[in-house]
Length: 353
Image 1 (cartoon, one colour):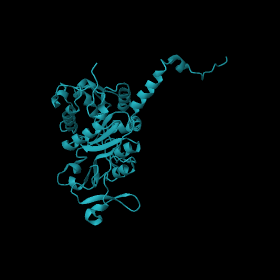
Image 2 (cartoon, helix red, strand yellow):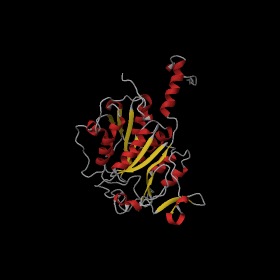
Image 3 (cartoon, helix red, strand yellow):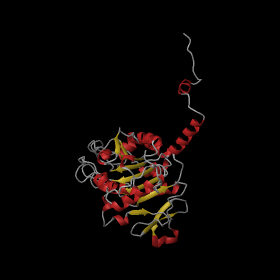
Image 4 (cartoon, one colour):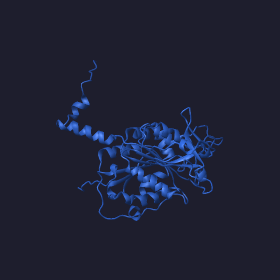
């Protein structure tokens, strides 16, 4: 058995390290990548494969688990262990694996439909329990695999094959959802921004517990251009807040910033109008998630104006799997348990004929 070593990555401290240097090529499989040409998933796959060598882990100690959807083909293309599981259940399967195998680095790949529709309940409980998982949620605001129906993140009024007169649903905000579930790490990035994507993955890997990373991803077949305003070099800097811990929260171009109004709400104003001293300083490590939640509500779901990207929250909290292992060890200290007695218990009845 390989000896566990401290890698400097807290969440990976029990995972065996490889002695041989690795490259992105080591994490590529011989499988044909079967996404539509131009799909944003290609950029994410390349970013992840390039990032994996940084972990310095043996490939056999890394696991990718997915549900159902275009994004869920991911495990086929990663030269690690993996499982293409069932619709919405990837967090549940990954939780069981992480709890019983602390020597593994467990990653989940899911989509906005897979994670937030049938899988919403499983995602919610994985987040609140703080199981040691890294969850990448690809958000293209559409059901791509089943050919273009509206999804839980589709904007209000979205015309699709399943909503020919426009969607009547108010869209899910994945970051707000995760923060409401008390997730200990929540971040957002964009498929085409390789540098920011890698920085965000690195922060997620460093985190001890459940890390949710929402990735804005383009489906060029059924919802092309969903995030174009945030990718257009002529406009993105005036639409995007890049969250950096310890720094004032301003648009990338510095023209407007976030401040706390007298009523306690977060508001946006011209920096010259309110002054830089009034700007909110981002604290990703704040114990109370209310400010992070407020930041998640700033963006306009239609125009995408005032969209924050980066790490919203990164706090330390005991992980479910560590507490589970501690309880298991305590229960075993007194000797082997009696499974038959546990199943039968004392609360049984005999029904008279």
